[in-house]
Amino acid sequence: MEWFRAEIRRIGNTARWSYEGWVSAWSREKSLRQWTAVNALSIALSLAVEMTTGERALIYALGILVLAAELINTAIEEVVDYISTDIDPRAKRAKDAGSAVVALVALAGGVAWAVILLG
Image (cartoon, rainbow, N blue to C red; front, top):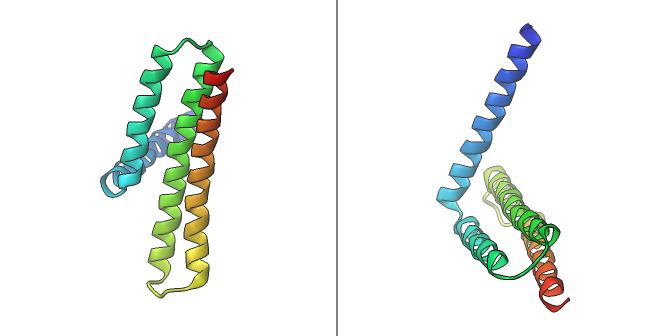
């Protein structure tokens, strides 16, 4: 029974740390707030356009993945900035790669929308 209590505590800690990570990123990252607004618009549009449940699920899942990618990008930027304030080409590549992740996931969402609307 002690292992069960430990697992419940672990799940609670994970949820709390995830929430704290979201709140921190929300307060500092304009991009996260912008992508959240884009997601809200995407959800509203998905309810106004005729589509299957599977198509709607794809749109919602890709929207969540854009937010996840933005959080990963934020984490990369925070770590790079913490390690050094020096200008280094490796730091730039790391930050640019994080940004590219967001762009690719957003592109996937755009492709899904295009295929649904044009299909």
